[in-house]
Amino acid sequence: MKIAIDRMNLLRPLSHINSVVERRNTIPILSNVVLHAASEKLSLTATDMDMDIVTTTPCSISSEGATTIPAHLLFEIVKKLPEGAEVQIQVADGHAQVSAGRSSFNLPTLPVEDFPAINSSDMPVRFSLTAPDLRNLIDTTKFAVSTEETRYYLNGIYVHFADTTNLTAVATDGHRLALSQMQSPAGAENMPAVIVPRKAVSELRKLLDDEPQEVDIQLSDTRAEFSVGDIRLTTKLIDGSFPDYKRVIPVGNDKIISVDVDLLSAAVDRVSTIASDKSRAIKLNISAGQLVLSATNPDASSATEMLEITYAGEPINIGFNARYLMDILSQVQGEMIAIELADSGSPSLLRDPEDDTSIFVLMPMRV
Image (cartoon, rainbow, N blue to C red; front, side, top):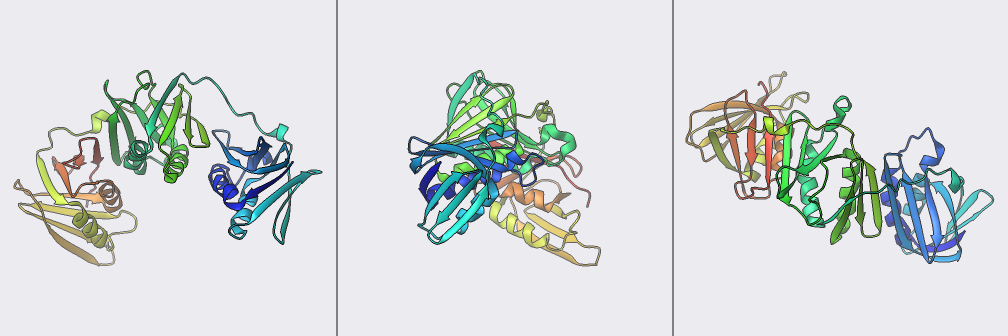
């Protein structure tokens, strides 16, 4: 195999490949990327056995062929080459020579035959989403995905039909819940309810930064495939039952305050500077027309800040984790946020009054 390729044409796909490949692998071949040169295109493939990524990029081919090269090493080399450089890759006798200008690197290769076969099982459900719609579903929910491995069924975004017309994405870690909905796309009517793993969600979100127009999605009960431009990302789905999240969404919370999102976020950020690093707890003292945020620290430090709000009900005090509250506030696109409360010990509902497609639930803390 012998090819020549523009540095940027190689760096871009390698950056996507690089984040899929695990840095610590007990199986050496899984640390490598497959390079396959044919028909004036270079195909790059990587897997961690749960997720596969395949991408293609144009190149000039002197000799077609395929090999596998350490993915992270190749990425670091190409990243450090000068901008505009032409990269030459030549494979012979179990080694790959990567050169550009006066730089030359000799890297070990492993046989392509040792690379695990990419699963190509049938995925009966196929539909498309616009990139902005998919970005919104992910951004609105992914911050609430659990990282607790014991409750593995919470380690992803639950995508399903909550009713006959809305495609719904939900994530929760037990402390907060985020839900986002959009009108069902054509072809998704028979879609199974699936839990897309956290790592796959993160990698998919990176692909959307390149501003593609549409994302083609294929699904089965066990796998999902996302095609974004020249990149195809395939992932196993989490094999588990997502809990009945509707039971924790409060209804009838009658104490409703309305406050400017930016002002509240900035105030929470300032006051939480004093909060204990462990609990990040802040207290909200709510009364007619006024919200007082406060935090204390075991070293006797304290902070308070007052905000004007729209509220005419009975006074109520409630505590929240400051980071969790700020995560939610950062997803609100409008100028105001409505916080619906019942009492100091019950979950609160947060939403943008101008947006009925997303809601957030936040559990209180004892302060």
